[in-house]
Each structure stands twice: as structure tokens, then as C-alpha cells.
Image 1 (cartoon, rainbow, N blue to C red):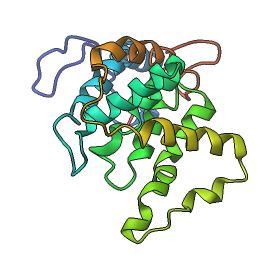
Image 2: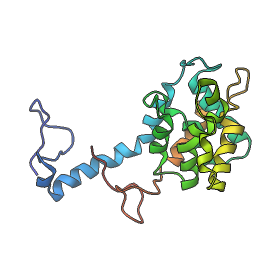
Image 3: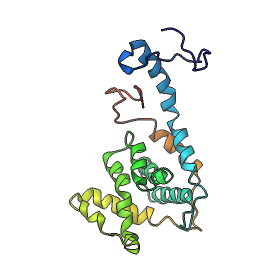
Image 4: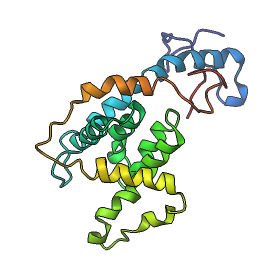
Length: 212
């Protein structure tokens, strides 16, 4: 493959594909793309943590800011003996507040999907509906929306407990909340091993490419 150039004409630091349409792609093109994907994917925890920090200072009318709420939710779960994956789910459950104003649980679920169990994924994905039990009726909404999932008792109980013990309880301004630095190693470990992804070959971890 010929040396790729940046749009301005100067050679790029790394090889780049030369196709104008994916149909024209060659094995060499995709080897170059896959080679770039691995270090980019390895830096995912950095990007996730940076995005989580965007919640700092944004209270949105709540007693504490959104980052502190996430940290406090994770702190409560950790101190209650929950495993590392569960604690990371607790930490990231509201990371979508910035980009998903009307569907924030979906953002967190999309980030966590390759890395967590189906049970934890369901809990994150549905926590907004279950959390609504505590306030939807004050806004003219149906606080019993969660009842549609009553026929899945184990998942229902898991998510109900997450909201009751950790999420809904994490609005204490005077609580001894652990800092983000405490949870950072957990995030890095959990996000280092994708369990399922169409971009990962069966039996391998982190091999593949992500595209637009």
C-alpha cells in the first residue's frame, strides 16, 4: 500500500486505508485500520472517565452535582460488598446525562454492553424506569411503569434493589463519598475485557475494528 497522506498532502504518521468506498478495501487497508483500532480501544477507559467528569458541577436542581451522585451511588454499592463490575455499573449509570437528556440510561448501557453481564446490563438499561417509582407521580407521569417487567422477577428485584439501596439514596451532601480516583482502577479493569462485540473474534479479546 502506498504511503498515505493527510488531507493537506503531507504523509501521515501511520498507514491509512486508500479506499473511497468500503467495497474497494483490501486486506492491507483493513490491517492498517485494525492496527489503529487496538491502541484506540485500549484508551476507552480514559475517554469514559473524561466524559464522566463532565458531570461535575452540574446539579440540575438536585441536592448534589451529577458526578457526586454517580460517585456516591458507586460508594454505597462498594461499601455494601458489591463486586467490581456492579460497582462500575453504579458509577457509570448516569454518564449519559450530558448527551441523552431524554434517554440517559441507554447511553450508559451502550458503553457497558460489551463488558458486563446481561443482568447488570438490564439493570443499567432499565434503572431510569425503576427510579421513576420515586418521582414520576410528582410530574404527572406513571410511577408504576416498572410493573411491565414484573414477569421477570429476578431482573426486577435486582433493579429495584439497585435503585432503592444505591441510586435513589445517593443524594447526601454530607456523605463520605469516595473520589473518582478510587474507582478508576476498577473502570480500567472492567473495560479492558470485552465479553461480546461484533468487532471481536470468538475466543479472543479486543481484536477487531470499529467503524462509523
